[in-house]
Image (cartoon, rainbow, N blue to C red):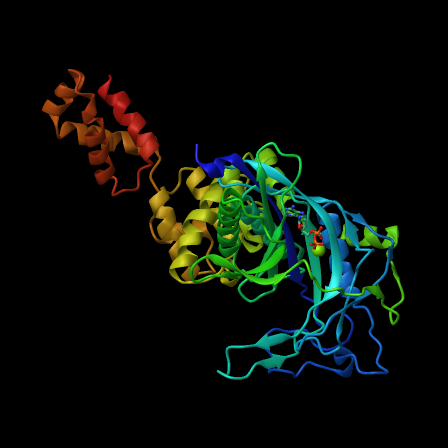
Length: 482
Ligand code: ADP
Ligand code: MG
């Protein structure tokens, strides 16, 4: 047993998601990514004297949506608070956030590990706040520039209970969060662009201990993979320190993606005193049950509901269901497809097989694929009715994309892909095929049954590849066993 096995890791995550609202959290400045620096910054965002913030209704709707999706308690009376600190990218000198009255408390998210097992992550709270601007250190070798376009954009912060026990679990949870916010259409979930950010709180303790160790907070990971790497590094670093008889310092650390290490940013012992107080310029917001119900009635189908539907009603296996649900747009295509066919498994195979490879080869997303799902259903029906073979179906698919005005049936006929399943005609071919090889027939009858494939192949050749292989196989067998 290695020393590392003596310890258990405890992790809690704090995620910020940037909301897809048109305007900012407390002003009507446009909230968009990639605009020219400092072009979307009004006096309200700057907190100039005499200006007043106004809460963005859409941001509240998004918070309520998320709260419903994770089964949280949604607060009726919401206050805002000022969190005071000085920093170059925070021109107001304070951030308007929620302190004692987060919009959501409790709730949970179910996540899935690679081995297919589920685990539950309890949420502590979700609160609304605004983002700060951005300091740019990599544009000039000597100066730091400040872009305030991001200042004031709406964020939700999702804080979990210390429920994770490994970096792999943290990774799986983040995958779930991203999927959820994309299904809800409240955030694009793009960690590389910073619209989904995550800080990890990590501590270690001896296995079986009831008391958590001192936690360290790690920031600045820009991918799920890096969150996992940072956690794995921290676990080892902390255990090594404890084993060497040292104490863990309560501190905030940053992640270095180049070598996967973390380094100290600031100590928590002399942490900022943010001097929170109720935001005097904003009235509390009341969220009524009527409003919550309204939002509830307009909720999209969520990934976990789809999973249940696909596995229980459509009898797909868990792997297929997970793959289909992974991207909302793929699931939407599948949902449209199965309006036209009840061969759910066949439809899943088409979406994740032929269609997916077609798109991959052309570097297209499924949103850019405007081939009617109904046509795929027609192809599936032709296969299921034994009218075309699987390989003919692949060919038909590619041809149909170029001839969208034809139905699958028409085009299959035009291309002469309809296979022959008329059994008298087939019987004829079988007799012909066998008569070519009288000695082989005798060998077969004497027990060399491996020859069956050869006879079927011959008959198939005579049919010019259009015979239904299943029927043909059956007929050859019957003929040989006469
Ligand atoms: P702080 O006041 O330092 O921000 P919080 O109590 O707000 O700390 O917790 C922040 C995050 O840290 C939460 O996700 C929580 O679950 C997690 N956390 C709390 N204690 C521990 C611990 N001992 N080890 C790991 N994570 C922890
Ligand atoms: Mg905190």
